[in-house]
Structures are given as C-alpha cells and as structure tokens.
Image: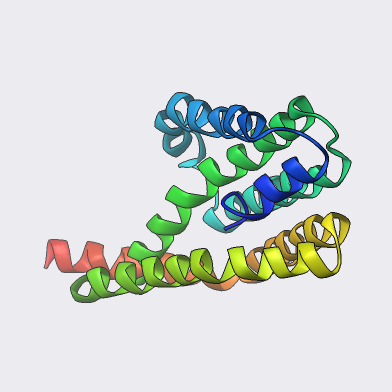
Length: 179
C-alpha cells in the first residue's frame, strides 16, 4: 500500500532520513490507538455511504498533501489527515459488507472483502513505486487523490441503492426473529 513503499521513497527523495519515516509512521499508530475506539460510535448514526465518501475524501486529501510535503512535519500532517480517513472508513466498510451479506454467507463475504484488500496491498506498492520512478511524486500523490475522490463519488452514487438494500435486509432479519 501507499505507506510501505511510496511514502518512504518520497520521504528519502527529498533528503530526509529513514528515521523521519519512522517518526511519520508513528503518528499513524498513535492516532489509531487513540481514535479507533471512538470511531465506530461516532459514525454509527450516519449513512454508511456518506461516511465512506467523507473518509475517502480525507484519505485522498492526506495522500495528495504529500505533493506539498518538504519536511517530516509536513508528511506527519498528511498522515494525520489520511489516518483519520482510514480510521473512519475501515469499520464502516466491514459493517456494510456484513450487513449486505446473507446471514449464512457473512464469513465468505468478509473473506472476499479481506482478500481484495490484501490484493490491493500486494499491487499498490509495485504500482506506486513504478509511478514514482517513471512519473514522479506529483503524479503519484495526485493520482491517489484523484482515485479517492472518484471512490467518494462512487459511494455517494450507490448511497440510495445501498440504503434500500440495508433496509430490506434489516426487515427480513426482523421478520425472521419474530416468526
């Protein structure tokens, strides 16, 4: 993914040391520890598609901000933004996958969801490194921003159908529970 290859390459390309990458990534870990416990409760009442759209925009802004990063502090601030997006998005997407899946297939749906995420984690470092090498950091981080914005639009586009599907699933589960 973007943090395992492209970010350290971008950080060292501007003359920062590997220790700076470690400090920048520590920000990610600290924020996850501090904020993750509150993320689910904070967004639980909101429409899932809106949450993941906003989270995608935050992630994109954070990744895109790397274009302007010229110090460890700048990279750290970008990490704050995309980490908040990440923290917000991950539990909501997992919940949506579980709610959309038929009760007897939830494990398979979650397995496929995890596998696709793993595939992204496998492909993204290579693609990111190639873009960084051939087109430069501006192209890489701008394309990350653009991809996240397109994803956000996609989530908003699917909002109505997602809400109908979730409502149908909830009604079916309620009927099954009272029947």
